[in-house]
Amino acid sequence: MSAAATSTGVYVYGIVRADDLAAVSAEGVSATSVELLERHGLAALVSRLPEGDVRVKRRDLDRHLHVIQEAFAEATIVPCPFGTVLASEGDVESVLLVGRHDELTTTLKRLDGSVQLNVNAMYDEGNLLRELLAANKEVAALRDETSYHAQVRMGELVAALVEERRQADAERILSQLLDVTEDVATDQPGEYGVLKASFLVSRKRVDRFDARLEETARMEHPVITVEVIGPLPPTAFARGL
Amino acid sequence: MSVATRGTSSNYLQRAPSPSGLADVLDVILDKGLVIDAFVRVSVIGIEVLTIDARIVIASVDTYLRFAEAVNRLDLMQTETAGIKELRDGGSSGKKKAEGALEGAKEKIPGVGSSDKEKSR
Image (cartoon, rainbow over all chains, first blue to last red; front, top):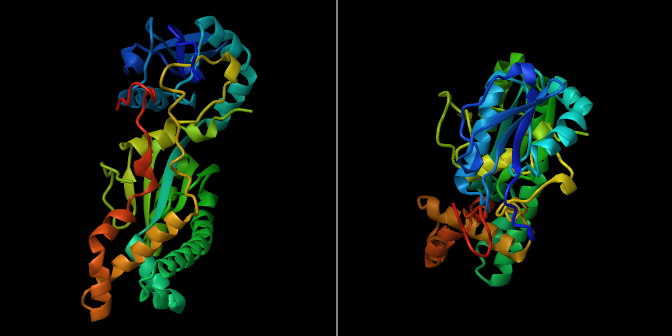
């Protein structure tokens, strides 16, 4: 896809208000330093990429994350997706800091005082299937048949039962959290996933959100396990207009 | 999904202050954030092949068989209550079954890097 193996460029981690952040000490992608490019009260967190081919590595994912986390510890940030590279510092200024100034200002205001919490609710495979098996005679009967056809049929049946349950479970969990959140963005859950979602939560309500989630996890135990990661920079809520 | 660090001890909720595993990191920073027009963006080798479709679970025979295997594996875990027939059936292919169903979509995330030359991690 990339015919132009780009030699240089400016990597952009995110945008903050210029007054909110003095510097970032974390190492940038490709072992670069991170600088603040200011214009009209906004500042872009950028790294000038080295000459020659730039190849991203696993650790560059962590570097990107650490840069936006360090900035987020002190400032409201509109994070950019991993791999955002513009051709020049001039482009960062004209396209982002000037070209999207009003939109970025609005987004920063919307994100002020909030953190992102990533919630992943997953079925415990054994406990879920045991429950489904106990409640469904057809599955229980098919379990005793060893033919390929019966196995596929049983799997199909179980998959449908899981899907049916998943929707109800996801809605119930979501409904227990919505009144303590500012916004929510859901992701596709995996095979045994119930609900995978990012919540935008006011710092003032993080404790309440945590307590509510703890209560949810207690109620859903042992069929569903609940994990939460964060507080994180609001990456899922910065898409822009 | 494994979360290495637990921020607080609690009875039921598993907490981590920061993502640690690859899948969790990707969840936070890949395709998340300010959208910038493609025509002003520049590509860096490796980034454009960093795709994630592992979250999509396709309803297929393969999926059904994994569910079936998982159900059958339950017998092995409940040896006390399982009948002799169930034990025999489960035991005949138990080892293979154990490998199947827990192989979640997450494990299939490709490495980061150029697809043809480098699979850097």
